[in-house]
Image (cartoon, rainbow, N blue to C red; front, side):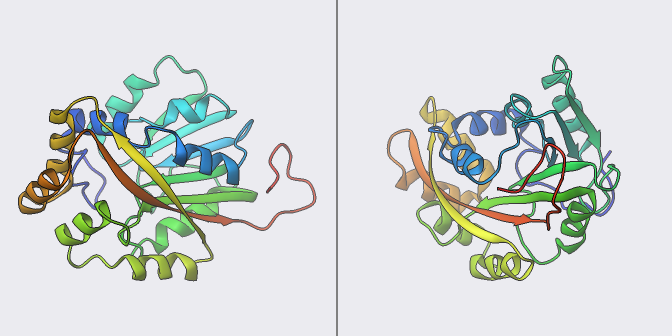
Length: 242
């Protein structure tokens, strides 16, 4: 069961076990998490992870947050996410979509979406929902892959020729987001995991090219961290914009 109107994920929906191994390789040195923490302090905050998939990032938010809620539109992934966080008292996973978040108004301090609002235009309703559920001074963070940076960005654009990285960046800028680029390393445990990940991310032709162009077990990948803060008031409880 999947909520109507949701754009299907081409990777994790079909190959969740392969995607799990990919997630374990992504941002191997923690550069993306460090960049996020440099911009936002979610210690003691209420966090919503939109399009949380099978909940891979929920435990890391839970280490510092007061509460964490994952929202996911694909029911099999909701089940997997609930199993992952079943022992974490401050974490819950809800079935729902970005365009209609199952959360009250002004109920969270941080809305995080990682490679979920990927194509920019068309995400307006989801971004409006993020604004609805945020408290004053809260923050929306959208993390996507930088298609202008090779080699991964070149493979991405080859596999999705209608995707225009500059247009997406311009879209988020028009929506009031600042953009920070973050260089990361994907480091796989073995060659099989690396090749499997490339095969679920790209078309067969582009995946074969990416595999041939990649030696060893690492891939440099640049992300874009789009961040928008809501206006603050003088007192906003435990959460203050930095």
